[in-house]
Image (cartoon, rainbow, N blue to C red; front, top):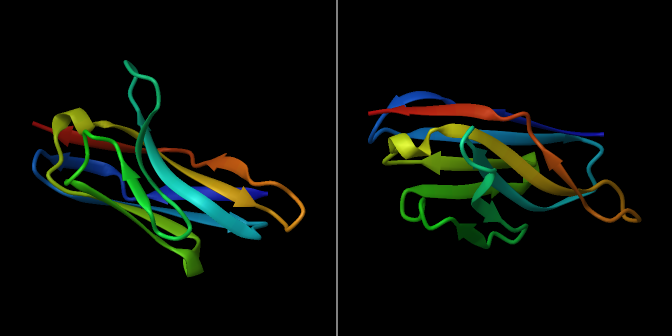
Amino acid sequence: QVQLVESGGGLVQAGGSLRLSCAASGSIYRINGMGWYRQTPAKQRELVATITSGGSTNYADSVKGRFTISRDNAKNTVYLQMNSLKPEDTAVYYCNAGVQRNWILSPSDYWGQGTQVTVSS
């Protein structure tokens, strides 16, 4: 099995920063794309940022210029540096990874348990 464990969420004032981490462990042959998504009770889960195994990144328009996604392939870990946080960034943030468990199997999507980010005004 594969587990994704997130950390780094919390409460921060508007304009502040947080750094989320997500470490993948278990039966891993290769990790393809990794990403961060967020969800609030009023909205469906939405993409925040993704990063390919080669380092190409993609961001939601709402976070461009404020958030930075990165990954450490040796540690099977993806990060999300969040700066200039706004109250509308408040959500549960989920880590996602496309994991190939061996050279025969196709990649499958795995999700973390979510970490709460709350930005106060």
